[in-house]
Structures are given as structure tokens and as C-alpha cells.
Picture 1 (cartoon, rainbow, N blue to C red):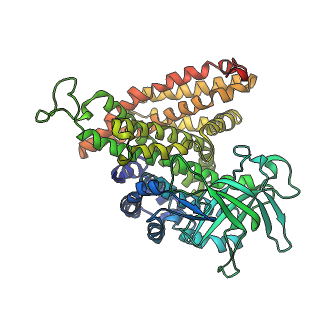
Picture 2 (cartoon, rainbow, N blue to C red):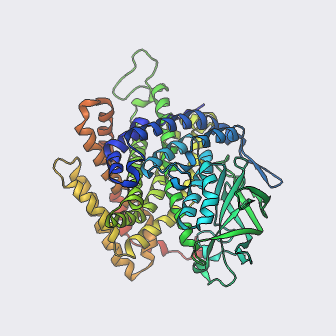
Picture 3 (cartoon, rainbow, N blue to C red):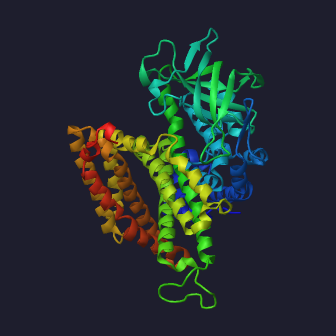
Length: 590
């Protein structure tokens, strides 16, 4: 059975050495007394134990059994309920939650490392608490004090879970089309009626209550997205003293039979006049829900990194042991009938591609986490605003680029195994199936690309983009920066392509959609180039301390700049080819 071992050494390298997180925390008053290097290391160590010994052993059996539905009830696979009970005892659901309501208040830079471990150990298990964490964030940011006091403590504790109810059968990306209705009641509550689909964890047997965050429309709501409100709808009604009462009129009509994440219950949820409570202001629910959605988008991006790391670990172990043929330069394992396949160039290409993309993504996730911490905790207004702008710019990149690379890396891992990668017992085919959904849910990657180029670059004149590239330039222009010339060339390519797109899109709106996916990838490779230059700079300065570890970093950086960053040249060419060729066929000619 495949195993998962958290990449602790690499996580510490990124957190402590590349980004000097403890120094940042020390200067942020809200974090200075909460976390330091020792606390972070202790949390990472414990997280590695929980994910490696409690969650990872359930990953394959959970996939084989899947979540089961009968008469409106969902049963999670064998072992999940017991493991979840142990999991919540550690306070993991509230790791970065508000301490005022029982959260641990840890920084996001630390939370992204934990989330990677969680997804690497088992995506299905991870999703149950990921939705809870996101729901808590939205409630904390937008709900009334009464709702926060009632619902957040048991949710952070893990006794109650959360779900996000947006999609309807006819309304996915275009949420302005939703039909779910909310009728005001005399006591200030609302009656919610409608049906939602694709609801992760909408029903399960892990927790005593599930708190649904539901998008619905009031009777006098404006048309479209401007008329959406957000409501908190508990599965079980809650008394004024916090005790559980009668079952609300919320039911699970069925669960989906899916390609992957089979142990995660993906539910059809029916609301039949269910009691709910308004979160935030009427008709401004979409903005409030985006607090949760943006959290989930980064989290799902990290799912791509976690799955890629698990696939890479298995592929490296197999490549070191599997004997097939001899190296092109002659026998390497003289005492064996053949050489391990890790000597072969194509196997090395696949392993190094996965390693470079995964470690680049890990560093970039930490950087986005850093900006989230600054946006939340910095006492300096200008620094907070700058960080908020970067978070808005980088969130679609993190979600889409992490998950596109996650699928590529998992496919490489499967390919290293050859025919065995197609067989269930080795675990690689499950990782390919599980990671595939990450490109689809929480806003498809095509939508993320449109958001990046259309809203975050073109619509605001590239203000946040210039802020981002200026930071890269400041780094690249320091003396003795590794790969400075290649990094600056990549930044110039991104800037020039962005400026060109702003010009052509003004004359033809189709140019934005035509270029958006390639543009997001161009942006992603440029961001990873910065991450790899930063990692190489640290590795270069400390090579003598640990030649094996830091030498591997330098060799992987060399591979990234030599073999992966050149992909940006083709992306630029594709973007500049324009939209015309996409519209050469009439609809009936496809």
C-alpha cells in the first residue's frame, strides 16, 4: 500500500529559510505572542504524524468503499469517523481560526503547509474539514455577533462542520441564475427553499451538526448577481443556549458517483422551507461568500501540490528499485541483471518535472500565505492594502496553476510506474483521479484565467501586476542573484505580453478569453522562476552546511530554468497569435 511522508525538511526550508516567517511573525503584534519558530516546528511535526499515520492509511480503503447514501443519510467509509474524532481533538479545524471563538490563531503561512500534508495524505478526508474552515472564515468576517458566538466555537472545535451551497443544476459559474428563495419571517429568520448540487460534505456522519452557507434570493431581490443574499442554515436547529434541537427541513436527496474523491460525499441538498439566518447585508451575499470561496480556491490549489508530492514520493521509490534495461552510458548496477529505471533520461525528466513544479508551487503557496498574513495582521495600512492587492491578483494563479501542475505531476508519477501505474494497488491511478477534480471545482481553471486577465490585469490597468513584477525586479537586481538574467527576461516577457493584451483587448473583447489560459500559465512560470531564484540563493549560501539537501535544490533550480521556464516562450507565441483562429468555424462545423 502506498505511504505518505510529509516533506518536513522542505516545508521548514521554505518557511524558515526562504521566507524567514518567524521574523515576520515577530513584527506583527497579533502573531508575536502566538507563534515562533519552535511553535511552528512542533505543529509541523505533529501534523506530519497525524497525516502520515492517521489519515494516509485510510486513503485507498476510503476510495474503494466510497461514501454511501441511503434514505437521506450518508455513511463515510470505515475508519473515517474514528479518525475524524481523533483529528479534531488536535484542534486542526481551527488552526488559523479566530482565537476569540476557540481557534488557534495560527498564521496562514503555517496553515498552507498543514493543508498540503492533509491533501497529500488523503484528499477526500481533507475536504470535510477544509469546507468547515472556509465556512468559519465567512461567518467570522460577515455574520452578526450572535451568529458568531453560537456557531463558531463548535465549528472550530470540529463538533459541527460547514458546507458551501452555491451551485444549482442550471446555475454553476453564472450564479445570478439561481432560483433558491428566502422568505422573511416575523422573528427575523428566513425560510429557505430550493435545491443545490455538488455540495461537498452536505451530509455525513462525522459531526453532530452541519452548518450550510446557502446563496438564495429574497422576494424583492434585483435580477442577476446583485440580488443574491447569503444565509446560514443549520442541519439541526440550535437553541438560544447552544443546545441542539429538532432537525431542520434540510435533506440530502442523493450523492454523486464520481471519477475520484469517492470518500468525500458530494451531495444534492434540498431545502424545504428550512430555517436560516441572514449573513451580512441583503443582496450582498456573493461578496460575503467570496470570502469563503477565495479561501477554498487557495486550499484547492494546495490540493494539487499535496497530490503531486504524494505521487512524486511513490514514483521516486519505484524508480530507485525497478530494474529495466541498462543506462545509455553502460551498466550502472554491475551486480544486477539491469539498472534501476532512475538512470534513464526520460524517467529523470518526469521526476525532475514533478519535483520542480511541486517545490516551486510549495514556495509560491507560502508566499501567498505571507500576503494573507500581512493583509490580516499588519498594523501598517499601506502594507495591508498592498498585500490585499497581491492576494486578489495571485489567488486565481494559485488555484489554477497549482492544480494544472498537480495533474501533470500525477500523470508523470503514474507513467514512471508504467503498466503498474494503471493498477489500483499502487495508488497512482487514484491520485490522477483525485487530483483531476481540483481543476474543476471552486471555479474552473478557465474561469480563474478569465478572472486573472480580465479583472485583475486588464480592468484595473495592471496596477497589481506592476506591484508584483516590481518586487521581482528588486530581488533580481541585487548583486549575485542566481539566474538574474533569465528571471528578468521572464518578467519582461510577462510585462510586454500584458501590455500588448491590454491594447488588443480594447479593440476586440474576444482576445481576453482567447489568451487567458496561456496568460495564466505564463504568469505562473514567471512566478515559479522567482521562487526558484529565491530558493537557489538560499541554497547557494548554505551549500556547505548540507551538500546533499542544498545541492539538490541547486540542481532542481538548474533544471527548472533550463527545461521548464522555456515553456513561457511558446505561451507568449500562442497568446500573440490572437483570437481569430478560434472563430474560424461556425458552431455547426465543430
